[in-house]
Length: 490
Image (cartoon, rainbow, N blue to C red; front, side, top):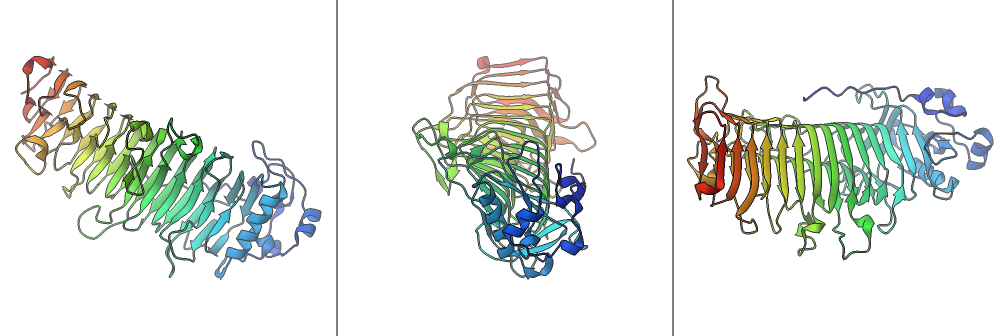
């Protein structure tokens, strides 16, 4: 599924203006014009843009931006943002960035509903499209939609840009951060050399789509989703995050020297109260951890008396994680996680510990469901779960336990179910209709199909096929609570 990212460069100037106005006729001759706001209002007509709260489209060139990769355009861009916010009493609008290479430092968007729109993600060598090149250092976001946490600010976004972090100055913060917004839209983004690409804090119903990122830097996070722990005891609902959607996202950590994943890059990290997350057609290559979710903010478990402040209700489909160093999917303290048609390949370098690692930390998680997909090349068990209700069906699992350990959580099974200090021994797990241990020429005699540890009870297995496994089912506990029906193989 790791596909080449195809950038549609149709977001050019004549497609920006859906109403009437002079941006439709933008040319090089007026690229560097510096009109005052009064002259601008006299020269430009109003635009209509269905679904957008706006009256004017501005360009940074009106305020002195050169987009020549030599001049620092930070002040010009910030002036343009401030003007756009003031045009409709902080109700937003559109700023259009004509093709060019904008050298810039940190800017802040103080109003809601403002969209920064480029002419399409371009070629960083040829300087086609709208390219933003970081010209600053530090952890502050390059573009920061900074809003109050007690108010859902509406709309806005960033669309059609290439972001670069390859100059003498490189930021350690995200290219784009949006705090406490709803219906925020980031799309058609090409990123190179990011430490963090996108960070969303709080808010709801955000959409991230058509994003490609390469050569991500060591220790960084591709997309970070942060909910700051609101629950029934917290009256501020916007501090939580509800309903983010990720579609058509590809990220990779470049080509590290040595074994895969040594850049310690996390593809997607959701932490705190982040719920109702949907991911479709997501691919992550050469990561330390592909997708991670837990109940921490700033390194501490939040609202330590309730799982109600932790990640909840993740629905993933067609998601592929290749060559992870530790885990492809790593989930701790969550309510429910579903993955349909997911693929996790630990790596021919034999580095991944587990393809899926789903555990309880401080709280009891409620459900892990895997439907279809393929999981292979793990040093230990391909799927390891201490979640009381773990359901795996119609999946293919092979080349697990590459470390060739003998028994237990050291890793000897395709699927390993276990319990920990917060797990009830009474499980409602089922393993149905899966295919284990590829029947090919490489014998897998050290791999069990299903391993049930620590007297975990009430697990149903049915209609599974075990090919060259050492055994189909191993369990440590009472046989009366483990059912096996219609399984084929050893």
